[in-house]
Image (tube, rainbow, N blue to C red; front, side, top):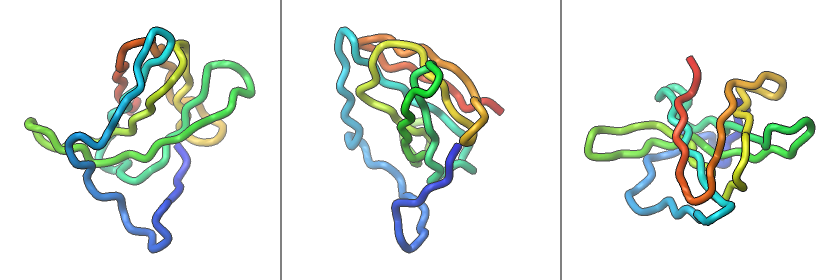
Length: 111
């Protein structure tokens, strides 16, 4: 996990409103929803294809209100089908997950 803030004032991210996440899904494109503990709100968590030296991308953990209460998650859309590494920090992998085309894969942050 890498801590970044896109808010120059250092404020935490507010909740995501319903309908604000659009995902591009297709035969070779999927998405990942990474559920996390509330304490990771605002953290930027990096992922990369599970190949040595693959470039990384990141997404912010946001509060996501729903009928069952608020959950915390980072959403990665438009991912090519394949295996991905979720990074705990710059050098430490936290988990691996497989993204399948046309589907949204969910994973829970390892404790």
